[in-house]
Length: 470
Image (tube, rainbow, N blue to C red; front, side, top):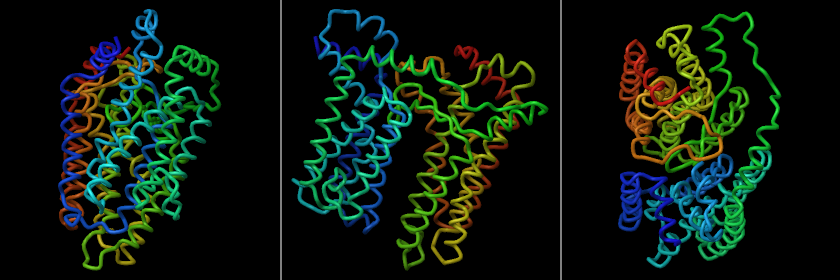
């Protein structure tokens, strides 16, 4: 019964083309890591900071926006059948891993390029990375029943623990990247035993978890309200979308597996952004090449900003009710005001990085001027382009906040197309200031062309309505 149940759950959550792409990326990533010689890539000491920082980030992300890949039909059907709770828990855990934990292996299988050691050590590291993926899976499940403050404490503790090897501490799960493979492996195994036991226990009583979450949210109070008295339509819309950023956890291979929303005010978000910008400036300074080429810290930082910043905005559609939002003005005007707000918001988010790069440029750090152009001209266009792709190809409305709303499909990856463009622009912009200016002009032109089309936005509104945005 167990294999049949697993096949049913996987088939109901992942389309076949998406599974095929996942297998291809996994094989390609790992093989590239095994067969590309370490001498082909020169990152020096920055490698250690990079992979440990990324691992800590993924663990924090999975803990903060964790959810469970369970559909409403599962609660109504599977849990009413005379099935073993152990089999159900294990089956749901496997699908959870495919939706969350495997993303770490998919995205970072190439790290074997940077590992100096024997084939046996690389093989152990491969196993450790799978275990880190399992740990991410367990954390996403365990955090499902936790309140926001408890999630933040758990995420913060795991993040700090992951960063300890940078201070010389060898008994952490990320010490496998600092040469302490044996100690790190032992810690990873221990953490997996603890958190996966808790995760499987929660999955075996998942109905109680949904009941608890529903009870908590139904009793929640609004602590602050936003007033729009005396504002025009345009001013109210701009103020609404400028003051807050909504994070909607609905990603295919690297985030929450349920539609979950959290909001944060722009002024609050600027505090951690400024801290990250300062850390970026430190690494850009100490890893500044002497030959005048852009440093790896600058290039990678711009690439990751090109990845994550566009992902903030497609889910704006998730909170819209098309027939209501556009009843008092044209679709083009409505979305023009939203885009204006989001462009300003994005530029404000990039100001700490722009300020740090100005200082770096004065000091003489290579690539800092290119980064300023990229941050000031290219990235602010990301809200418009990302919103357009999301509305045209893969809109997802927030209706059910707890269960998985639909299967993960290859079509949903269409929203990653802008991410690919912005990441590529970050790389191209690092070659020369001229290319950076060309990229800026290109993206501004594309953004204006999309914005000026009345029919485009009208078609998106019709599409939202046909998709059931009510």
